[in-house]
Image 1 (cartoon, rainbow, N blue to C red):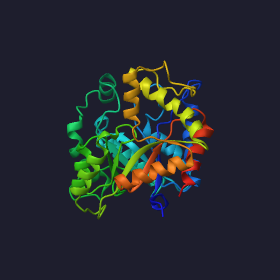
Image 2 (cartoon, rainbow, N blue to C red):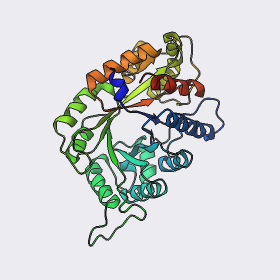
Image 3 (tube, one colour):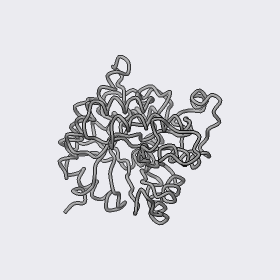
Image 4 (cartoon, one colour):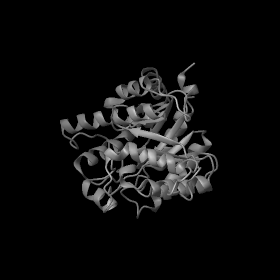
Length: 332
């Protein structure tokens, strides 16, 4: 039996905006449509990610978007993939997610990253006088765990809401630092292989070899990011994938990230070194018809031993995105 049958599927969404959208509202509505769709398909969770000052990404106010998604779904677990902790005081994060957990019990989780999710000028605008940095990440996590846990004797700063909510915390990473930290703290770990697959195997090995059981987990639990573009036929999937190629190329060039329609060929649209860079960025992408997708995912699970797959899917037409998840759900 294929490992796919027993592997939970999840979704990571950045509320992508199209080049013909009037404002962010359509992108946010499409995120809700996606959440409702994958909930019906039996997916485990949907996360949204914090990014700032990026034209084409509407998920910057992550906690607010999660409230919108949670209010309009029933069972799907919802979380951040992630909150970029250097941008925020832990108390604010604890209050936000404590509020969400109070409103939607047992459905909210908190994925944390240590990158800013923005350029330096934007990071300064976010923080103002707060001197947060990636180096504070371990201490900030400890503070968050305290604020979300039971009230301690003599505790002077209490998150209300937040205290005693025990919102589940995940650590996210695209390098090796968070793998080591997640292992030390006995927390679940998600690797951002949907855009940075280079260190995937090394990070998973570090996480598993150094894992210390905790009150949260008695053994490692690793989820990996996978770009997904599925269609009834391989040829159509390859055509639809050009939207994702254009978006990654725009990211590398510092251009707008608004989704663009697929094109018949990328020839003339990128230089050879750019084509290679886009290929590296999307090195784990699963692109094809049902059988090709199944084969690729089987190999990926065999090679990584991932406990869960979290898919990204940047397609121009909303119905093609929903169809991709129909196809992958049908493989189990």
